[in-house]
Length: 277
Image (cartoon, rainbow, N blue to C red; front, side, top):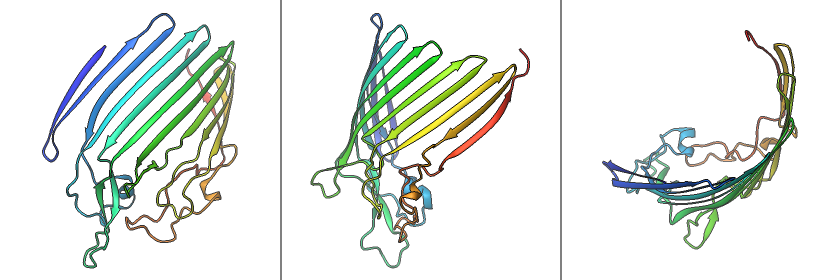
């Protein structure tokens, strides 16, 4: 068992107390971990939308409360021979989350178009992650699945809506065949489910997509030749729609959020040379 506590004295947000407790239990092939903690975060003007364009349109911070977070998690793992499995349950509540708000009506004599405010209600995240690893001779397989239910209070105060850019379902699989000093072949596949999009004039929900990758390497003596291919399906958000907004946002941004890949299909190859023993 482990317990700790931290106290912060902040000139703007007063005294903040942050406790934490965690435990570990390992009977036979099982490993069980649990943790619970609280924390705070002092508001800052450098949120994502403002970092993109600078502070020129942002009104001074005023009447803000510090973010307050409570988190908890339980992780259970089981290992036998060449199989390893684990399941993780996690949850967090965050109050006073800061977000950007358009000033209405804007003062025609001021260039301040937006301000930072505390969101109504609290953000809630609940989820679970499943992991499986299996090794057979030179072959290693890893699979994972993540479920995330992330919501916040509707700005109208009449219900809850999904958090921006947070997929509810995502998964991954990696297969690796490796003989040390001879060869390596790997394949990876990652799935990202649909995401809620805020401030996107083209769609309210993103498309699900896959990312596939392939790696190969051959070693002869002290020289290794490798080739790596990424995004085999050539997934790009710009295939679906433009990244450019039709009208500049009040914050000054000209682009939408990135919810997919944008690098397209890429291949790189090279040589590694080992010196010495």
